[in-house]
Image (tube, rainbow, N blue to C red):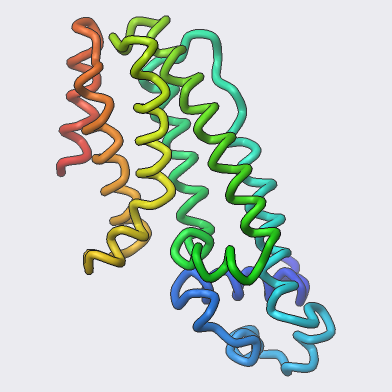
Length: 209
């Protein structure tokens, strides 16, 4: 197997360090050390740290396109759960964008625009999923409740980890994803239809383990 090229190694390492320590707390010299190249070599590929952030942002935008694909006309509980896992996996892969959101938005206009677009798109897709599950009989929810439930689910997905850090409950990416999944279920369960209640409860029990 061929070794990844230097630019790819720099991006992968930057993403790992940004996720672990935060973008503001990571220097280009630290990235160069971790990749085992000189600072000059890194500068050849990315002249500034902002270039690294923008390159990773482009990767994020490419990956979230799959997340924002509209679901089928009638979405099952399992379909929704696949969507949710894809969402949580994608956000975990780029967790630095949400953990350092205030700093990044202030420093990088492209991050601000990308996250604004993503939040709007995710809210719209979440509404489509909930409406589709209503049609398939998985949820018994009034049309008037769908916008606020969708909004609450997006808030959990995008800001749950940030809240954990502020409240002193910060943890690993895996623990954060499990906590988000449980929070999503807590919002959705009250709307479970009688026919689908046992399926939703089985999922809930799984995430309590």
